[in-house]
Length: 105
Image 1: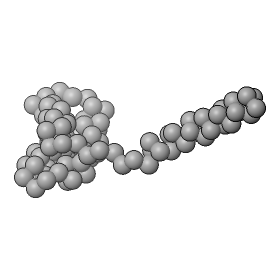
Image 2: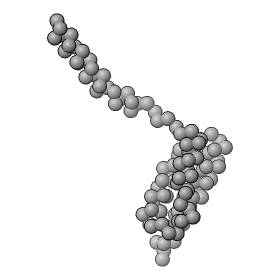
Image 3: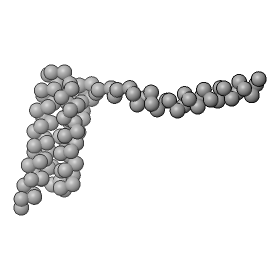
């Protein structure tokens, strides 16, 4: 009886462990707060003054980062969405302009 109980316990434990990642993956990611979103935009836009001195790879990464951040900003409440969205777009456009200018020359 003792071995049957132990075997049943181990089988149940194996099911719980196997289902654990599935349960965690099913939970939707928590959207960032406006303060967290502002911090991410600040970090993405931090190098605008040095854009001319950045390498092409750095500029491409910053443009991609801005593109990844745009949907996060679009999900924010209205005042934050408008202000942060406009700032992010301007930063992205500057990085892309510098990148395009280098490719033309």
